[in-house]
Amino acid sequence: MHTALQTRRLGTTDLDITAIGFGAWAIGGGDWKFGWGDQDDALSISAIRRAIEHGINWIDTAAVYGFGHSEEVVARALDGIRERPYVFTKCGLVPSGKNDGEPVENISRASIVAECEASLRRLRVEAIDLYQIHWPTDEIADIDEAWSAMLELKTSGKVRNIGVSNFDVDEMRRAERIAPIGSLQPPYSLVKRKVEGGILEHCREQNIGVIAYAPMQSGLLSGAMTKERAASLPANDWRSKSPDFTEPKLTRNLELVERLRAVGASHGRSPGEVAIAWTLRDPVVTGAIVGGRSPEQVDGVIGAASFRLKPEEIAQIEG
Image (cartoon, rainbow, N blue to C red; front, side, top):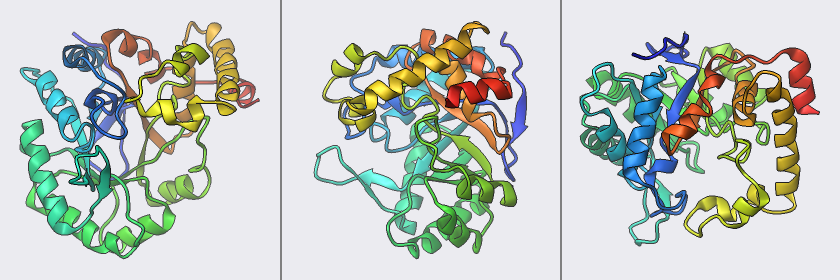
């Protein structure tokens, strides 16, 4: 029996979601450009089930994570679960066709419809609870065809709600001429704050739900990352090439972790839980997507679902 976590309505969708959701990016494996190294599927399945036991009621994945592998693992984890969580997935990034692990953007109607069918098959569901365009292309006009296709999928009942990911204000406005946006999924953490102001304000004005991804900056702010660990990340873990995980930024980022640790200590919370709570401090953020590759990792962050920071603690963290 799991604990009941509080839920909030996600924008104009029909979804009431817990403050944190399970992120299934890392469990896609290492066989593509933005993989997190080789993963143990059995451990990934245990992590998802542990999240559900804790009361987390949504899982966020994407077709591009391991080119379908993450969705398949999610389906296996949910097999036989009575109280199923909502499943969110994304379209618009497809294999380049060169077997180089590189995804390319394709938000044409034909590609979106085909991707939706493939995701429904892999996830073994009749409808996707929230379907999101993963990334816009460089041509803003492409959004017209893409968002019309998303609306079509919603009207046909293949998806229940439609949202976007990584869109800026102009891109959201373009889509809104065709149909309202249910939710936006932006990157948001203490290290990546670009969405503050314009993007989050637009979501507030238009009642667009916000689900923040990488609130711990892909593990950097979890409290478990060290210089040694960052240096020994495998080559098929995209973080090994990320500027945030290498100098000169790494030292600064790990100093920030010590501020998170200091604030968390008095509450018995990990730096990661404090980092997640920081992204949830503004009510415009409905939920945060938190990855986990083992039950222990899930146990280490679940406290963020109910933990709230005081104004003076926020000031201390932001230094």
